[in-house]
Image (cartoon, rainbow, N blue to C red; front, side):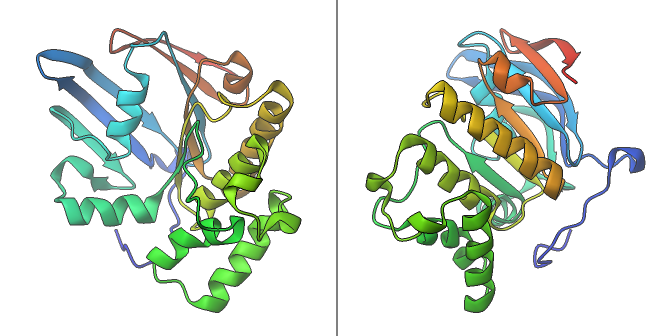
Length: 240
């Protein structure tokens, strides 16, 4: 897959081209195995919720699929790239190109403004200045933060910080978006707004979304819900 292509076009479900594939994924820490042979596929434009009790392996699976943690067994493919076979530098490049990530606690760079936080991944990918400025301006309007472009994270509300984080995650038009409890640190009103935004942006861009959540409201924006228990997928439900 061409890592220099500015706009990746991935196949759809009818073409049999998932953007995320896991086969028999196993992961443990020290002597404890957390994931026991996980299999899943996620297609372009799909929204998938990952639910289960604390300690069931949800965040561990998300970290493995995102290339943050190395797996102990099995295979993971992201947009055709076998993550388990890549060295550190190649893995970093693949993650930077094909993934966007949203966290519960935002993880914005505190010394950068809203606009600069959104622009940062584009700088890492070598986008030109004019192209970066146009993309940042577009996203600021889309997440309704045009008037807060010069504000620092410390000057924002929780909802504003999460909207900034969403814009940053989608700035480079990634085919896959990973979200770890994206509404877990927000009140119900802001949480609902974030979910609506995620649903709209996923529909508009065809970005696949895998979201770890304890919230049935968050899961309701997804097409499928996977339930984990003790490191295994115990059932799958269609949410729409």
